Image (cartoon, rainbow, N blue to C red; front, side):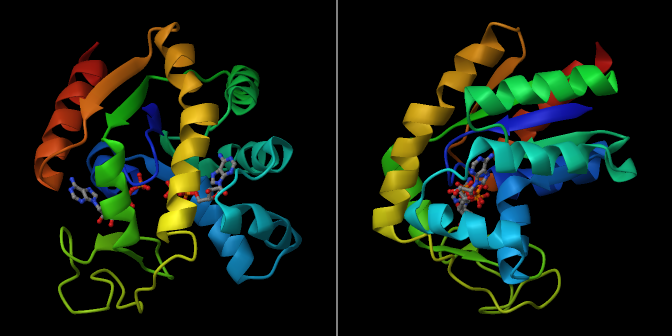
Length: 218
Ligand code: ADP
Ligand code: ADP
């Protein structure tokens, strides 16, 4: 299956991606994780992305489209993928359509997670992230088994520099202005599925799984 996960920062895309990818044998591609990897390794791309990410602005479309072009051609995505955090603008969505047409591939669904703004702020300001695998936790709602350590690889959890309230508010505004129009874009193609993102993590996954099972059958 080839899927897009759409939803504001903090809506639970990363959290739910892990379950989806495991059950449906597809690979997650998170542009945010990729950019953080480049920053950590001090690449040219990482240096260019830093100033935008720190302000909660979007990294320019051409840089992101180039990353996706290179990634999606890799063999690891041949069984399907879940795009998490991409596309984020209409320009990116159009570039993705073009790339998929070149590769003779089609999208199966765009999953849209709905969570109200105040809840997003609460989730993001207490989010902790693993520097090794990118898995996220929440200090109260979704704590790790051992304080401060990733359940999967023992990585020392950290708070992302853009997960402070001021930057979070800007990221949410950027989402409203630049990314939300993608919902109409995909709805007009008959690909959008809406999921209530409030509730227990496992209940939200059940909602997602029911949708994906029904798509798989058809
Ligand atoms: P996104 O990838 O959409 O930015 P994350 O998956 O990183 O979002 O989740 C954002 C934060 O909210 C994390 O701290 C995560 O542990 C927490 N979280 C995820 N799902 C839920 C939920 N259903 N209820 C409460 N907190 C959640
Ligand atoms: P979240 O889901 O919590 O908003 P991400 O990890 O997806 O965070 O993204 C973090 C930052 O990386 C964004 O605020 C933006 O600066 C940059 N970024 C990630 N994906 C894209 C993209 N598709 N287009 C432009 N910028 C991006």
